[in-house]
Length: 118
Length: 107
Image (cartoon, chains in turn green, purple):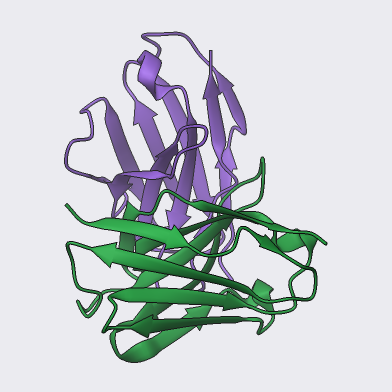
């Protein structure tokens, strides 16, 4: 059974960079399918952050205004999210998931709360 | 960008009720629509993909319909495990992926 697990700092200072990694087990991220990040501010709905495909093709939510970067490390079978210039509005539970364009999100990580605060 | 609008925002129901949640897309997404169930403190769980295809292991009381811009999720007989928040999502590839704002099903 495929599993996804988010990891990274749970506290980031304002104007800093949020960095998270999603480690995939029992499946290879080189499979030709999208891998995505989704976030959920406390008490609010789901927001798609961005996606990465085999070969490093990426797409992002325009609401990030160019602050996001998603990359893959096939040697470690993980993909990562970097979000720069964070503010309190970036405080959320961040989920990684398998899925993206024309592929529903069938596997999800358990989620990781990231708080932006000084 | 494609906007997804769910209704109602909150739905009060009882065990055994038949409930329907509606999701409208701001432009045609054909059938590139998924439904997710989210319980408090948990990751979303995929229920339905391609508007009407149930994910393996999903109880048969959950069904999805629709195409183009209007879609529905129906729970034929509400069970205690079904009290949760439900989200629709478009993943058509013609626009950034987007979710509806969610429908909370409560007692």
